[in-house]
Image (cartoon, rainbow, N blue to C red):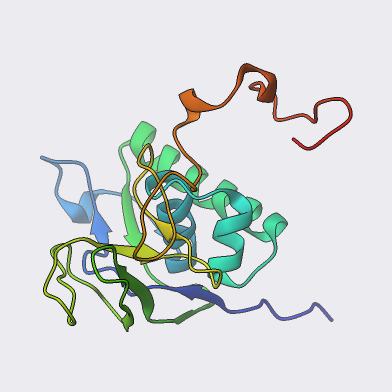
Length: 180
C-alpha cells in the first residue's frame, strides 16, 4: 500500500479558480486541473523568487517534493498555454497556513491568512510590509529585490543574481576548496 501524501502548507485559497483563452466559450474548452499546492509552489519559486529549499521549508515538504510539484504544475500551465486549454485551480493535498508578515519600519511581526496587496502595519501604520518566509525571520520580496531580516532590511539577503561573483558561476557547482 502506498504512503498517503503529506499535506502541503499554502498561504491561502486563490480567489480566481478558472483561467481560459479569451474569445472562446468555456464550454468548448478542455479544462486542465491545477492543484492548489502546485499553484503555491509556482508562486513561491517563479513569482516570489524563493529557491527550491526555501519553498520546501515554507510548504513543509522536501526539496525533491517541491521539484515534483513544480514539474507537474509547470507542465499543466505550459500545456494550457500552448494548446489553448482552460486551467481549473482546485484540489490537492494542502492545508491553509496564515502568512507571516513583518514591518520593515518598526520590526513588528504578525500572521495574516490572506493579506491584501496594500497591507499596512498594525503597530505603526507603515506600508513597508513584507512576507517572512522562513522561521529564521528572513523577509522575502519579489525576485530581484533585496531580501533582509525582518524589520531591518539591508543587504544581508540573497541579493540580485547579477551581484554574485563570477566564481559562483551559472552551473551552481561547488568551487574548489570551499563553499558554493
